[in-house]
Image (cartoon, rainbow, N blue to C red; front, side, top):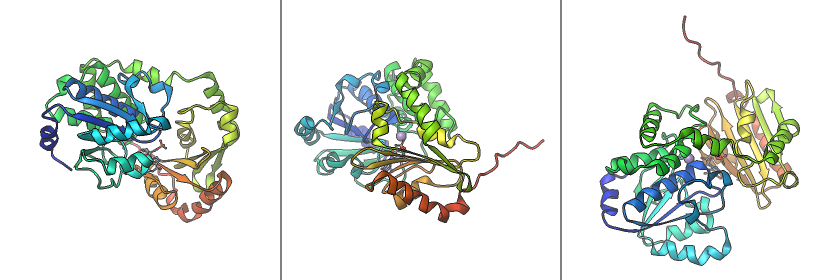
Length: 345
Ligand code: 5GP
Ligand code: MN
């Protein structure tokens, strides 16, 4: 972990700054990027935020959204390469290995500027010059708040920046219910409230702004696609490309599905496998001791956090499901439901 004075020194004069985050940015990825961008612009730096791919519409309210460059659009390749090479400081937020952002990762690896990593995933790759990652943080936005505070600039966190950071913390803690929701998290939220954020607006924009079609898709998935395997305390969902198409599924529409599978009483391990065409993208969640980041790393080229991870499979959907099912017996003794502790009388 680097010291904050190194970053302070780096940012002591106006810089060309590049900020990026992971593929298919979620609220923590985009919120920490745009929160940091808002702050750095206030400090007089020239900032470009580039996302590797598009992101859900329910994040488009974040201040700075209009200026985000989406790399995935091929016509942006040369422009993005120029931005990366011209950057004096390159911030990588909410991802821990460059391989997760494909070609752009290689451009960053070879870029001449100073690379700064702010992240909360396990097992970060050692590519950054300055590293502020901490896998016990609930969200990258929590770390961005601390970096700004430790640079002595908490008073620059206004409503707009604060709401970006709040969105990241709110979603990565599952609305303040995951075990990562520490005292520190709540103290930071108190500071963000002081800065003027409206937390019910943020909640509504993110959770209550879905299309009717998305809700019907959810209904279909829960009724027809959810499989519960009681002998493994596991539930999973596998979705084909045709099903995505039938419900006109948009980026972000499948987010949160995995949590429904995990919400069944007694279930400790949940997986959602989605055929995205080039590959099967998998989300894993668990409660308790079973580590989905290890499971994903060992079998599906993935990683993430102890209770929330993702991975990928280059087989078709059905063989992927079969491989997943074939792995469960060897984990059976670890897939146990821990009883909730009851307060002593
Ligand atoms: P999600 O299921 O929401 O896509 O991802 C859950 C967590 O796992 C997130 O923190 C995400 O960054 C991480 N994650 C998702 N997919 C991958 C992957 O393919 N590789 C790694 N290393 N982490 C992933
Ligand atoms: Mn995150």
